[in-house]
Length: 311
Length: 288
Image (cartoon, rainbow over all chains, first blue to last red; front, side, top):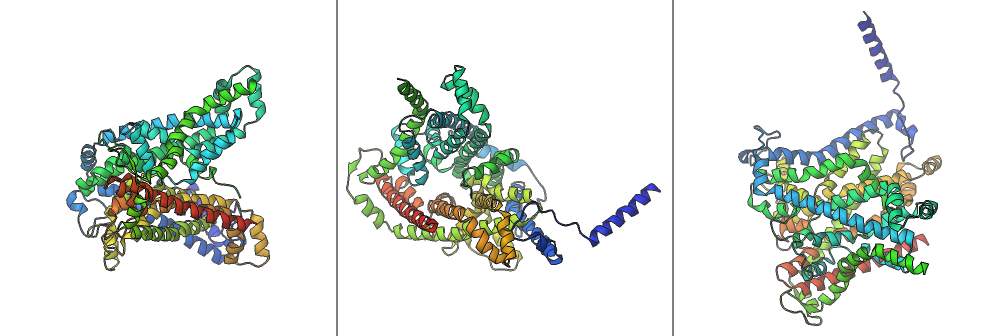
């Protein structure tokens, strides 16, 4: 009895909701006014646009990835079939294992992780201490140095690729991770972000630490770093992601197939294996960054706009 | 004495960074200049050759085409990569549902290593069982040769490039749109401005700074296109997709002529600097 009563009540309220729809929540005003949005046609157009945008985005950005994953699960015969099968008929994980062996993905992933971790550690140490010196210790010519560091942002990296390569060769850093770590640390944008954040730390905090007898290293470690966690997170994630995605410099510097990171390794072997094996390799290469994105989505999105000017 | 000590500690903190920047950022700029006047193959000692490298670079049969292709690529990439993210951001900003999903999805390709996106699209562009021709076939449209024809190869590269890069521009525009004070829209509405007038007279002026900045960044970024021609076409068919940076790479690593590559690099740097200066001047005039 009670259940029936609840059912009719539910239906009634649903019908009522259908007749007079709840006005759409508007937290912020945009181009279309809330009034227009809640008009009968505004509502219809809104839902039409919403559904088509969601469909279009899914088709444009998720479907290719779906095709990549399912392609990796098809047999060589099935992947060459025309028209293609939307779902693998006989899904197999063999291609992943084959790709793992053919591309030597184990070595490539270990190399990539090593280079990315090293680039992160080294650039954090170097850039944090440089930004700290420029922001809080204020040496002579500090602004000139900062200006020269920021000026490197104006020079597109590909333009100085050849002289950078020649320099690395001259220093004997070919096939040496330092050939990637030194250039990674020379990152003007990291220094700019860190310095701007350090500038906002109140002077009293630093002075209090100094009165307590803390030297500059102690002040940096126990006062500045703990309050700078947000910006350190953003810079860390971007450094790691950039190092993981990097292609052109490792292509030139890491010529030894035992030393290649995953991007370079995939590019060198992709021509020699079958399409489904390539897809298997791509899926494995893509997964780490997708996981990073899932976990650190907020930081990454915040970091994207951290550098841009307001207003 | 205290000042000296403070400076010493400061430079102690700075020294590794100064080393990295000097050797791996500032010196290569100088080196490029020197390189472009020398014959260097990294085996024999370099010798001064004056302007020979520049002459040889200009005389290369692919030289003119490389510049034209790069300009065409930049123009097309701007059409797709500059206008599309802004329009997408405008639409996304109006939506009240699925915002987190849409933002996540549009940024997903940016997270993938470029090599993954490029190799994935190489398969899509396959004229036989590739996804794109199969879709065309499904829609009863004639198949395209994509990367294999000199008329569609360049646009194919632009599509990959837009797919994997547009996420960050979209999210940056979205953040800028959310900073627009709502009163402006209310005022415009009271003055009887329709939706398109509101975009023209409120949205665009309010985001102008970021629009100009992104324009400059995107032109500089697309002028450097390398990985797409390197992986997808190797510059072909018939040099239709040779970009300036790709030609530079070939000078250096196929012909082992680093000086000639340096000369081309100098030209690209000058072109970009002239462009940046021009852009800066128009921006300043705009504000005055």
